[in-house]
Length: 421
Image (cartoon, rainbow, N blue to C red; front, side, top):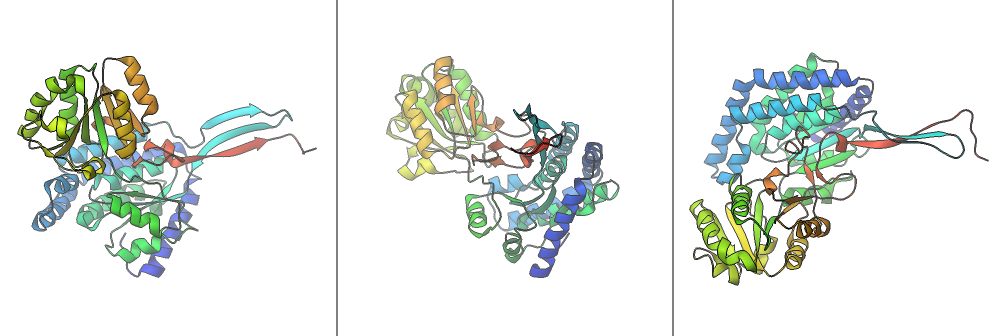
């Protein structure tokens, strides 16, 4: 789907999505399962054209001298595309959340009162770089009975268009209305501005990208926005940590894919183990190409580190850069994370269950991990099939969002002629 004249066309798109959302309420769980499975098959069948389109986007990104981490987020090779298709297969196999009874009780008056999950309605996704979001968001929204408008960044426009064509082909052969998934390829900013004013037809906006994009959406939108500002994630190595385990967790959390939101940006190490851990781990990180920005005590133990500034502790690098600080207690680590973190994902490495329990209870983040890499903070890793985003908000949804987080509960009351006295 390509938009042209912003005002009339965008308004029509939103209204068409609203009509599709109404039609989706008449579909069955089996209808939605079949459609999502067909979408996965369509991605596999269209793999050559999708990868060819992605090559065009990658070539343009390289010509524009985009950083390697951004190019990595954009890249969609055979292996990654198959992983997306497998994610859709998993979503198709998930229990359908629509119609699930959250609570049921008989009130003192005798009325039967239930809370039942239902679709949100129409969701607008605005996202950057990662074209896998196009397919995964479409599948998750359909699983929860929602229509979705997908507006990706111009840097992935060819890939998103090719994926959109594959999804449209699949929906054309299903019981799902074609307008339930609309991929908007018009790169104009006016399109987004206009969509954010369509509060009568769009129920929720989910921006997924850099902090600048998300703040711009929040400032312009008349529609509720579910935010994911940034991923300033931490690993804290406790005095009672297994240091070999800690080193492997830190290497994975920082080096595996440094340009994603659940990569660790800062390492906190207890002073009791800093002397044993940091010289060896610092050398490994340096050999892997990581620039180390360290506080005074950490820098003394890592010859390749440069001095960290106060601003560094608030930074989301999305690159091979790691801030390192020595702390004297778990309390200090918790206070540092709550002061400087982004409430995304933070980990503790320790063999002390009491220290872990305190960290889990007191760190105010959407995901808190014990003896595990922050890279695991992901919908697919949590068994959701995929995620539409990772919410750092606290209302409605928090953390990786799957199909269940794309529903809301309505009250259903059944009486036998009951009236209020």
